[in-house]
Length: 297
Image (cartoon, rainbow, N blue to C red; front, side):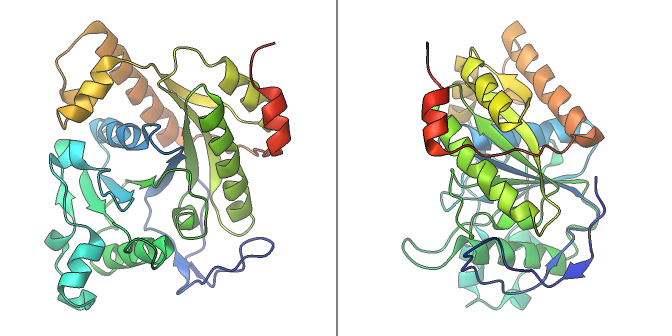
């Protein structure tokens, strides 16, 4: 992983940026930080939670941060919808000095520490503020100092400044995509957002996680054109759907040969990321180029 500067005043993010940066961005301790993006409903939370467990099974101390107002990123780890950072801040009239770590951080399956950032009320505020306040609280309570891995699970395919904020803290950005036009179109937008952030921050594109995909021909075609590569592939199995309904990670489900293969793929992905996924210099395509590229001849 690249060394990062300890403290810096954030510059402007790309051409025409209208973001507001409330404070300098600092390194999240010595942890390796991954931000998981992808089209809404593509399985980012399932991917993030099972990846967190895989890291934990490698003996790593893991923190997962959900960045979605639905605050359901960690419920398969904790078996419930935990209070969000915004919830607990509101309960003390936004006086963070009154909070204790146990008010907003919860231990889940395999010892994974879980935080749900939450979000501002609909139509108000900015997701970037929420992410910033969450990281600030974690740092003030020294909760990042003994963490090996941080996984940000980020809202849908939103690439506005607010929900792109985790990219300011991440080492690698991972994109979850299925083998279809809509999720690949969203992936292309996310590649553009990562490219913009990489001009001024240490984040780099780590690669694609193919999810719910029996085949990967469309993803492969896009990867070849955009300079990406696939890190792991997970098929569309009913056991994955059932794990969400049972509020369980895949590592807790009844054993079966197909499930063991998926678990092994998660373990291989965690090892690959921990060993240091090579950064990719992805180049987003024009909308028309994607339209012409994908599909059947």
